[in-house]
Image 1: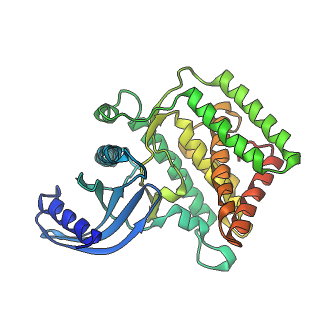
Image 2: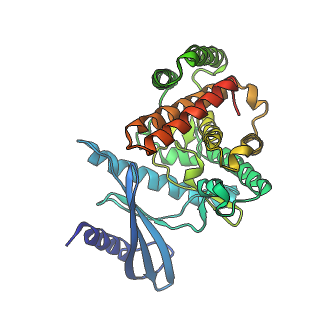
Image 3: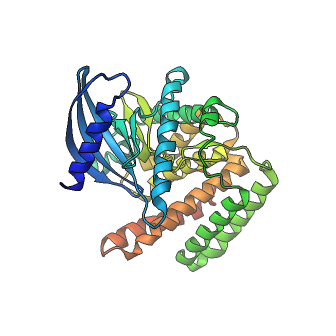
Length: 353
């Protein structure tokens, strides 16, 4: 019996033991599989006496010795987090998250209800080379505004002292502090400096040092910590009938709320790396719509947000430049696009979009 058969058997056992609100389990049918960086998954069609449910099994996995127990804790933490958010989300519209069905500790994994629609990232990629039908600019701005509103509510539900935060207290949630954030930023900065044009290095370092000083002058100590998505990008949200649904909280941790904001703005800024992207021409109005939804006034001159935005830009650039080891021509195309994005950002003064 192969691994996939074993997984199916464990899903059958879990669903027979009961999935709240769905009745008696009658059948479990595999549909397909995929693999991500920190998880692998299997799609299933579940048949209950109440009807059919399309489901996705997310199995937490990390490479390396000693991660097995951590994977179980991460799976349980994400399940409890999603359960709490899904329970509270109907009264906190427009926030929506994928619905968790059951935790399967033996894998360790989470069985989730599959969500209709496509990722926001897929919508942003449409229209290149005249292929596919992208959303109208006004519709896309509306989705971005909704993303900002939803993120603000997510942070509110996960602020210190809230019922959901208290439910999660038994988990050892990662909580990087100010020194950790700055050390990580400077480590990624060094990688970017090693790979950018020689005549740009002084400009990049000077812009970062200015942002760092302004950040340290403005940031609260200790800075406020809320529960963060941790990878808040268009890749991790579904769009369906004008509604956004967040998923993949595997990088959930406690930190400054503007970390999630800076990450989302940075991802949007990188749409400009592709000159054929219609969405790339809408970066500024999209960012404005998102920030309008989030409700932060004067955000373009906010030194705390600027630092987290630079942190996110360095993170993406540093990660993207690793693809120099890819086979030609993919390495040339991808790294070239990342360097064009860096050059364009430097030309703009390395500020917020």
